[in-house]
Amino acid sequence: MHNSIERVLLTEEQIKARVAQLGQALAADYRDKTPIFVGILKGVVVFFADMIRAVQIPCQIDFMAVSSYSGTASTGKIQLLKDLSVDITGRHVVILEDILDSGLTLQHTVEYLQSKHPASVKICTFLDKPEGRKADIQADYVGFSVPNLFVVGYGLDYDEAYRNLPYVGVLKPEAYSK
Image 1 (cartoon, rainbow, N blue to C red):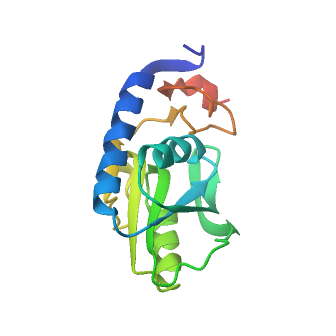
Image 2 (image 1 turned 90 degrees about the vertical axis):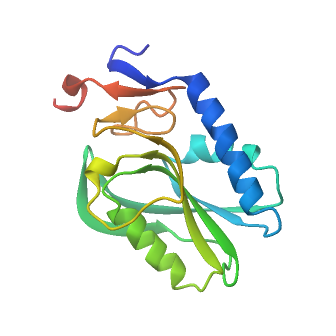
């Protein structure tokens, strides 16, 4: 375990098992639809790679970069840093997200995607942190619900560090309160 991690919240084995379950659920729900999986960069990369391998149906992928965070807190200002590269008109879109916390960025992203007239937009989040919710938005597929703790690993970061941890851990407060 990394020395800045207070404790492991989700093990690598728990994550693998849950991703496989989510993949099966998405494959069943979209078996005849060829969905587009849209990953919200950067935190989603690890979850995204595992999910699209777990969804054993024809699909397409794309990415967006949307930001509202600086360090540990949301700035409240949402920026579209990278837009889609494919037309989603009439398509079934599944947003893959690393963590649904305040929901402000994801709510903005869903509204933006809906303006492009897809057949549907659903949300699949690796982690759901409902205690932090500020927007009226819920995920359609949830990997794990977690308490309102600062977590890193499996793609989640603090100032671009810890993304490569194979587990999700609670970051020690002294690691981010410097």
